[in-house]
Amino acid sequence: MPRPRLEVADVFGRHGASFLEAYPASRTQRRTMRAIQQCRTATLGGHLDQCDSCGHIRPSYNSCRNRHCPKCQSLERDRWLAERQTELLPVHYFHVVFTVPDHIASIALQNKRVVYNILFRAAAETLRRIAADPKHLGAQIGFLAVLHTWGQTLLHHPHIHCVIPGGGISLDGSRWIGCRPKFFLPVKVLSRLFRGLFLHYLKLAFDKDQLSFHGQLAHLSDNSAFARLLGLCRNNKWHVYAKRPFGGPAQVLNYLGRYTHRVAISNNRLLSLQDGKVAFSWKDYRTGNANRTMTLAACEFIRRFLLHVLPDGFVRIRHYGLLSNCHRNEKLALCRQLIAESQPVEDLSAEPVPTERLAGDWKKRYELLTGESLEMCPLCHNGRMLRVQLLEPGAQLARRFQPEVVDSS
Image 1 (cartoon, rainbow, N blue to C red):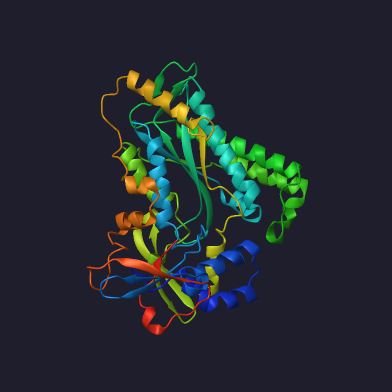
Image 2: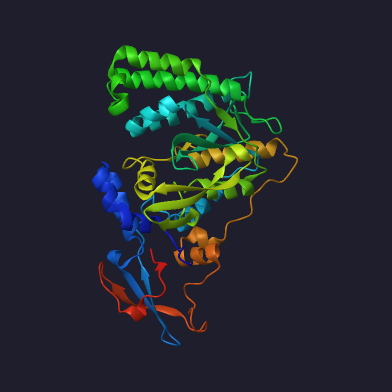
């Protein structure tokens, strides 16, 4: 896979030290910066491959495996999607997005673990409550939720994408209840309940001293100031957005591949790094997804990127209801049985994932993903590349061994 001409790692390498002198950074943010800079370099070690025909030698360096690294997500995403294949149901799928207003986003930035957990909890409880209401669906549902914290310009914009099978099991467990065509649940009802639940749990966190405020938000430590903020948020509309429904499982896999392992910005969006400024492309959703260019000072670019580094151990992809980890296989088997008994009118089964992906062979997954074979010699195209030497972390290679680098992890 060819290396982009410009990477986030290049910005960190040239301007990271200046950023750390000017801005405070947490230990996790510093570790993320270091990992991204070291990814697929001699610093992390790797191995040498040699062609058994022409003798061509190629170094392959290890990846950092940091979940915020733009270079480490493709193979992991492909493996994860292969595992999800067995969990898809032969029904239409829906996509619902929960967002919070700017006042809440500011609090979340200073209390990431607490507020992001509240965001997950409020969104999940909202969906399950409204779906269980006989006035709406009257069913137990399952869904997957993914946290994103960024917008196209890297500003802090926490929101949750929920991917939901179009229906659920009746409350008595006897039958499958499908959604109406192209309609899942009313967004106005979802929005009101989501707002109420979120603010309720946020107030509980405040009462338990689980929130901290500093800088421009320091005044919110006062009970009356915090109460006024809650009142303001309670009187504003909260946006819950229902996107167009997917057709079936195959389309869901394509969608998940774009969203689940996405980072704040990909290397392919970077355009230039000159005179201490970074230019990158972005889509303006307010004007029909027009492609635009934004230029930021390098330190500001780094600051915005690091806004989206999650707390250590924080889970950003979660399963709920029928898809929750507890007894998932049994619940899915019951769903398929009940769906079959309801006599679906169309075949929405997903095409099978290649067995190489399910088997976990990273070289085969790389070839399926990129169309390039890591086993064929890139020089003579006849021989096979065989591992001949391990490279210890920090080992330096002769210049003639350095032209091509691939991910060996």
